Picture 1: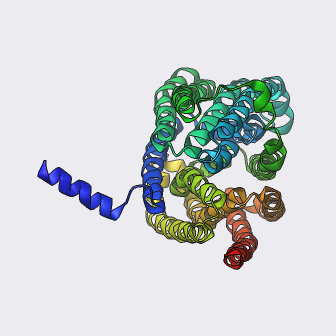
Picture 2: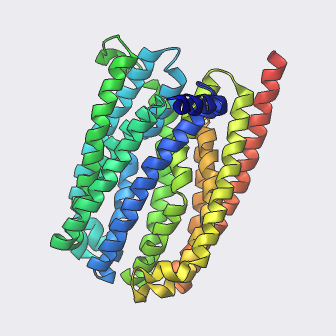
Picture 3: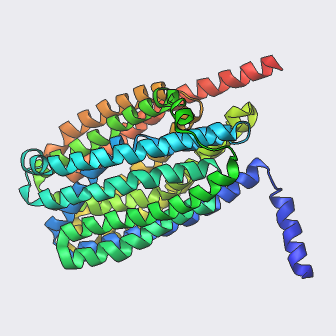
Length: 448
């Protein structure tokens, strides 16, 4: 008992309750636990699927996931980021409004997810035959509507929980989805091939949505004692134009561009090349799991600091996040580079030729991690329209570089384009953020 009190006292000295340091540490711990566990489960799932399916089948799965991701932009309606940003800013001074905005974002995600899911089902035969030149994937592409629908709902719930700084509950959504993927997708791939794997991934997102609904319902009741009236919820629709619309348009720049490049690669080099890229890209995603996991935590804290006019703490948190992301992804790049043969060999002997693709994609994770934090700056500072312009410039650069490199170099050309385009993206976003933060601090000092 005495030792327990000593440990508790020491922890209180290191991480005093309520401080920014403690909030960041708590958020990072649960975000890493949730994202790390989910990412490990997804990695195992993909390796098992790569061994279950043929090389062409695994490439088809990657292209289906990319296509579903493009539709998911409209399905999600930016609900996760919207909820996280406004709930974090308003939960203390106006909890009723925070719950109304959260409700509006969740309903928007539910409605748009259903409509876009139906649209994907209708368009699946046309997309598979005409755009993707692969009519055999029409059925699994239509089944991808389940991934889209439940993923949009899960994203909205996760964003709202993060805005409330309910990090353990947000982590539970990710773990539930990861476990669901390992169970349902692997079983589906075994019994139903590509179609079964896609359906299993949809069921995994459904499991995460169920966990999120249960957690958020309890939290919302405790946070606001006032009943929710739908007329009042609709009165908050201004945030859809102020924040959600530019968030959607920013994604509409990024995802369709990457999807177009994937289609370009398949048309020039076939699904086998897509399989190489898909395998290597799993590890770039793995390197980015830490920045991506902490990203909603950073957005929540930055928005809260912005709403309470703590400009100095805001700048410190932004700078710390940038430095930490660079260090973490650089270490990860070195590890992946040294073990690239072992990593690609784990997918099968045919994947060893993709070592160069893996190394370059791992390198691109460094500037991508930096831009991940800069994206949270634009969101928390309510500069989403400027962020849209920045993403548009990146899209032009990436698409132009890919068009010149992919025909001759395939997946390797895509990897090179990722590195170069994100370096440019880092330069112009970083300069704008630096000027904006310094200006805001100067204005705060002048006011005091």
